[in-house]
Image (cartoon, rainbow, N blue to C red):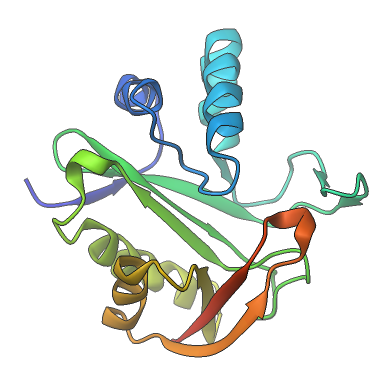
Length: 186
């Protein structure tokens, strides 16, 4: 089966839960914290969890930043990579009317493929599919960040027309170390 991007649903949630229980996370920064938080939310309110992954009108609660301050939520959504089974997720967020992002947001898109499906080209395919959505929102470019040693992610981005914009120091509250910012013109 060809790779598809599916809107998260209760029907496909068991594949997502299985991936979490096997140590995968949709968030590469707070891996264990996100896994535990996602599993607890799903156990408490599976329908609410699934609904939270699709907020194109930014109606969700404000985002709490690492310093405790609040920031307005951006429109965004997640899609699950699916080849007949759960393969990972890709998310897209944007600021209406501009390609720019607020300073606390380090990219328009992020993706995570489950370890047992890596090497199949799924991240490149998913990003390519999602770029059409960014165009439809009127964006002229999107930015993605990755680690300097994450060669696979860099290839995903460059395979989709991305070019390196800069290396920068991630603010300590968001992690540590140097990150690479790429831009894909639309």
